[in-house]
Amino acid sequence: MNFNLNKFKAALMCAALIIGSIGMTSCRGKKKQIDKVNNAKVIQVINGNTVKLNNGLTVHLLGIPANTQTENYLKSTALNKTVSLTSDKSSSKPKIYKRSSDEVWAYMKVKEDNKVIPLNGTMIRNKICEVNTDFLGDSIQKFKEINPLPPIMDYPALKAKMVPATFMIRAHDNRQSWLGTGFFISENGLALTNEHVLGEGVVDGYVSLPNSDGRIDGTRNRGIIKLIYSDPRLDYTIFQVQLDPGETVPYLELAAQQTVVPDEIAIVGNPLGFDALFTIGNVSQIFDEVGKIGVTADITTGNSGGPICNRRGQVVGISQSVAVSEAGDAPKFGVDIMRVRRVLDNHSDIPTYAGK
Image (cartoon, rainbow, N blue to C red; front, side, top):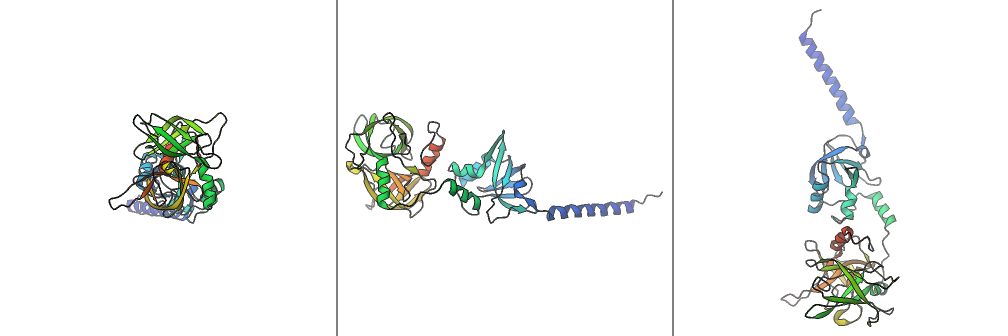
């Protein structure tokens, strides 16, 4: 039998074209579920909420805004790691894809050392970013079911909630003594104030709790067990108050989301030694780069360390100081509670607090 090389090449080329055509048709025509992506690898972090997988997919992380912090987290936690994807059942974004070059929106989990890390939830829970609610149907509903927001209160009700959880601090060093304010964030005496009120230079101090009518007359004094954590730069201190055996105290819940301009707020403090003065105002500015919020409510000497609460009674900041400018203006500041939560959530000596 004579072998015709040219005919063989032609037949081979034809077969290759047919097989290629079948393969391309099956690849492009078959719809694939996002939830079936289980063993892909992240080969590139495009930005703070978008990555490229080795199967060709570009994945946008649901609920995650792109910023420097999220980008750095993805590079350290997800890059070159094996991941799986989960779609949002109620999202307007598609739950299937046809081509490996498609863009998809999903929740992502990293698999490493027999552990599974849910990236989206971890970044939000650890306050690396605030949640972006775009395209988050079923997750937002589940969050609301598990974490229903407290109702908005009128100002008398808000005052009645804040005052019992707020107390006066009396402290001194080797040169002078001073007054300040603090507040409880758990029934067991975990508390917050400013570092300049209660910091490393303090020789001794104690707190004076309010009576049932809100007055502070010095009959309910409690000692301070220890300073758990102090941040002189941001100006806040986490500390533990010594309660009586079996005693529990009123406390305030920390907000889970950062406040925004122009949220209505209220402040309780002890300015110039006056008991539990209640003032109201608005959030005027957010200073993310330095961890501060600006407010219009009055903050004067003695207010430092008191709670700044939203209308739901949640703490959004810690009253800090009055900075008088050359023009005589006196903008008021507070420590952004989101910065404090980062430490509270990761400190080994703090098992829980209100709002965790």
